[in-house]
Image (tube, rainbow, N blue to C red; front, top):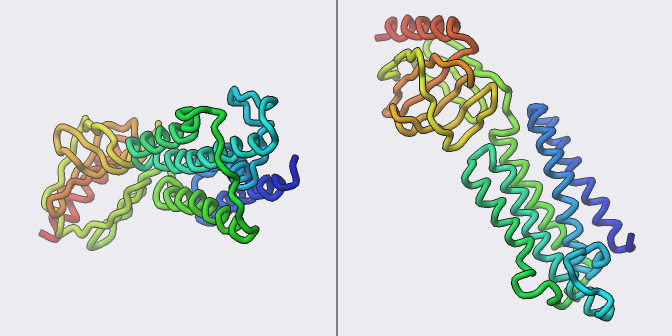
Length: 279
């Protein structure tokens, strides 16, 4: 390992560790912690390697891109490595954003991942052996650039995970109060006053439709969905439970259920009782 690579190697371990610790403190689910660990510990080291190559021209010996390194002098090798490193770092940052967005918005996640991948291989477009001058910057400026890339990677990733994906509890928690009730699930956290509910219906075989933005696995389907009955609506549902309660509030539709048909029916009756008392 070249001396210039050692700080980047340490950073490649430190930053993912700090994000995981942040997730533990914030109470992320074990799935979210494992997902974050896999993504960050596999991808952020590539960001660090790219930064090292870009800012120092080092690491070309490990860059196996079909370039004949023996035909180049040391200056040319470092220039080629620097050019590859810049696009590798930028592309991997965007790729990391895309993985975080996958559970928040599938389309945006796929677009970002595709864009990141394209940027990582962009140097091929103008020739793999083409180089660019290694930045002749002071140590302080290099540190600022590395810090900026680190923040651009860790902060958006942690923000997206903490804003929804990280709080996945694999349950739909519903609390009934005297005047209102609360429904909480991944990407769904709402309180409703009984007197603001315009309509409340029970559906024996509710068709959830497609996920627009939110979360879906074998246990929970929640977030913003789209179906033939309502169009765009918000859902907090156990994936394998067909019955669902749908309420209309201010022109918006919200649907939810509980972990069994009986519990969902019981919840529906309780809601009707509360609504009728205040009507």
